[in-house]
Amino acid sequence: MTDTDKIEKELLLRAPKTRVWRALSDAEEFGSRFGMKMDGPFEVGHSVQARMKNPKYEHLSVEFEIERMDPEDFFSYRWHPYAMDANIDYSKEPTTLVEFQLEDAPGGTLLRVIESGFDQIPAGRRAEAFGMNSKGWSSQVENIRRYVED
Image 1 (tube, one colour):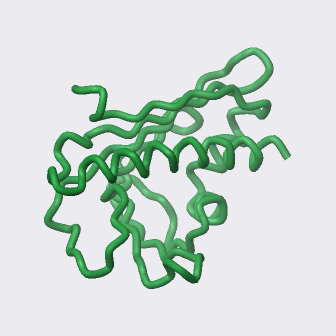
Image 2: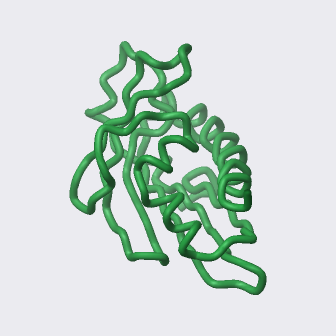
């Protein structure tokens, strides 16, 4: 993998793993934190559609293909990164893999967020998808922190 294939974020959350796990793996909580309305629960082997709540993007739908859920330890899904143009059919493109790894740590829970597979995204939008998602994950890990530490 190249240094543009994978985004990694890590942070210590002052919250128990149970709380962090629920914030990540419960579709309703996940959606509220990410500003999306999910059409169902997260279940391994199933896809969940989400609509953006932001009026600027409410015409967009995001699909999460749930790959793995190891309670309180690991959660992963696949999606189309930075799929923001309603005129493009992203279903023909490869997806990236998003992984949330949780570990007990002194004072709370260590969370690692990894999104990989950008090198497989079409060259014409690869750099933008990587850059926007890198910025996005920087914001989202702070949203997760605020959400679970409040």
